[in-house]
Length: 396
Image (cartoon, rainbow, N blue to C red):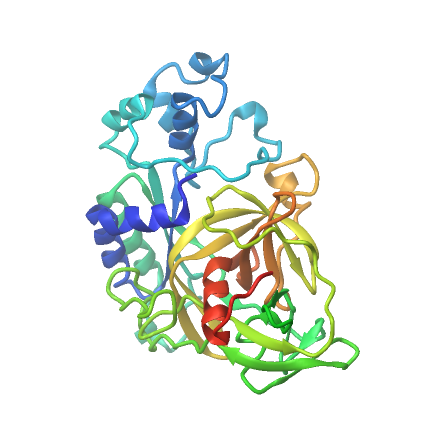
């Protein structure tokens, strides 16, 4: 797919998408916005530019441009009927130019109001059940109708999705206590031989002692990225809220980092890693290693151009985090495949996300979950932050 930087740039240059986001940000139930590449556009792009073989039955599948659009379901995804039950194919890094000419896509776009090669999802929290004698709360279904109206009047590329509230992932009884529980995701070494464990800021704060599960002291937290809270009643708006300065960073209105460094006093066994990913693409196969769920397969999902996460009664607006979509262990996909997936849980916070390259490349830092998917911060940002904090070059 296009890289996540490409998706961010596309959003910044699309007034159509920004206007829809600005309108939706006025609706109180909205909790975030994601942006991903339209899968049919990617399929046609790959054929046009020779990235895949042209399917022999292409004309039978899609006899007219309209048939393409009839096969785009409510989730904005495409699945051939015969392959509906199969696991999505393996995919590594794929960069596609969102501005390239794709004639087959143009035919589709001309039929339906020039759809974009990307799909924006407006995410809202679950609608609350009305409470007796609290009529002033109103019926939140009216908010949903407003969102649907925004989507209808904005673009065929905008969809609405209800999701559980996302939480900064944390629980007790994990492999690192500092003083909260989480995961010691990985280790960065400096040229002098010092080693720093990387985890989340909501696991360890500056000055905290860090222990393993046997209560053995492993080090002390020497730095954390301080989060800024989202004021009550404010929607996590991708357009109006002030972006971090310096970038990437946290504040004045939104966050991009949730990471902490632990000065290690004991040796830590770690896998061989080739380095830090410079860029990433949605659809890429990755693995997450967390203290609770161990090593599990995932795909990188949409770019969360802005997304609200909660912890301890406070909300935090994050910019440009990445969805982690759990994948089945076997070849089965669809509803059956979902029964064979392992969703990250609270307690995996700080786990490292690695690509499927051999040796793997550090892709991200897991920090949040909503019960159906995980969320990660780009490893390149965490790495840059750690080097700035320590004032030295660090290698995984």
